[in-house]
Length: 162
Image: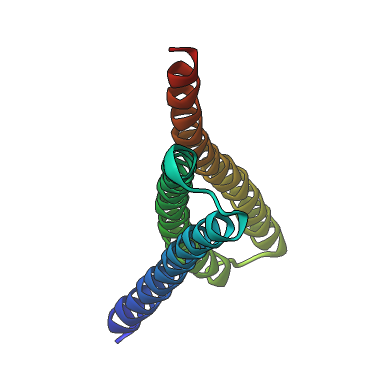
């Protein structure tokens, strides 16, 4: 029965992470559509037409595309971090259950103190490792999103120079 409960908890956590990820992606898509509509409205209000309007629309479209791509990268990063958090919590749960078993087997105060201090040390070590791993995942996602934006900016600069 405990194994079945763990599987249910794992599925619930996966479903929650997937729902959160879908919500973030939906928000990004809604923002992109909002930017597109705002760009169209500004073009209409300012009365741009002809080549200027086409250039403005093209640039706006490229900018929106870059924002959308960066948003997709960030959502993927969010999914990676969510999955990592889920895996870390599962591992911590297993290690804590093992530690409780060791504590239950203690026959003296010294054994209990030793088991508790090991548990504290292991928890701290895992927290530090988890923090490092999550920071790496977050940084990787942010750098990839920044490269997406910078690539679009570099393309625009090279066209201007030509």
